[in-house]
Length: 148
Image (cartoon, rainbow, N blue to C red; front, side, top):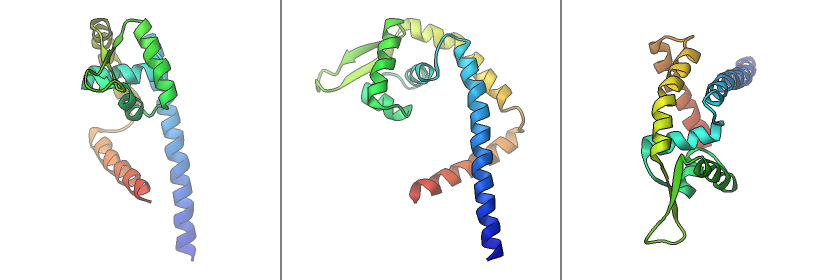
């Protein structure tokens, strides 16, 4: 009984500690992204298209964890800034692709290395070995939680 209560307390404490860490890390990451003139969702969409190439707009929302109503708004904003372009799928009229423009590529080529460096600084409290171990542990925890 006592060890079960202790394990429950540890689980609650882990939840709080993980959340606080994520909030702090995310806050610094958002600050870095804003310094480049983008918000987090704009950066996430651009980063996906920059690294993975053209994507169906519906899939972008799933990959960057955005509601389908929000993804249209973000794509519109990025299109107005000339960072991405839409292209209708020739074989399925219901599908529209988004791809990064040359201007969007140039922006990401300039800011992504800076962002990567900022993320390395933010995560600087851990050694490479600690990061690898933590990645394994958090993946294990996430996969278990997903399976419930």
